Length: 241
Image 1 (cartoon, rainbow, N blue to C red):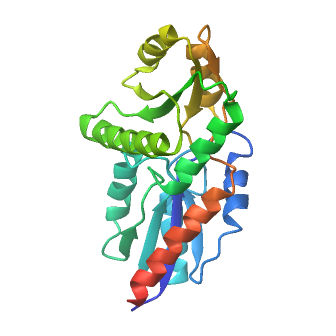
Image 2: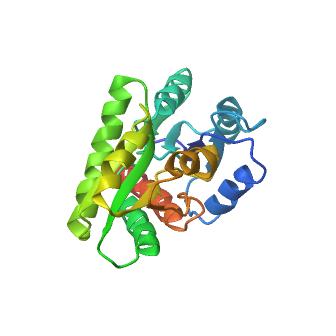
């Protein structure tokens, strides 16, 4: 069967402490196989090429690649797959899923809604994701957003649950649609970590609208550990079949 490893690949960030927070989170993940973490960009010495060198030193030949990304509608997923494919003569790669519309994501959204909601029943929900300016990737984004909306609607009684993306930018359009309804708009960002979108761009766009917003991202919530653990366990079980 060969020697196996788990390879988690994230986007990377130049923000102080971001990499450390990811590393700290993943320290709690249990894997019977070696586990390494690399980044697509911005983290010197921890890029994909560096990860390949780590795998070589470990003398593994079967690698489970887990993208630490919110959505499989991200063009970065194709970018990672393209880079990794250059090494297919050395390694057999299997890819895990992005977070997408996983039940743990739904729970995260519901927790944020509960935190923001006033209990008046006169509130609506606006989910905001990154989106893509490439049609095939945006189609995937829309599929994920529709699934999240459906699951949230089944578990809540909010009159309106709508979605918007930055690419193409539909946020103002959705806010204008919701404003005349007289409801408070609970704005939930679908982003892995706090950054320019959650701390600057969304606050700028929602200013002047009747919104409730706390800017909380997926990280550093413990459920991400659970999501990673689940993916690793599924890979392990698949290999043992």
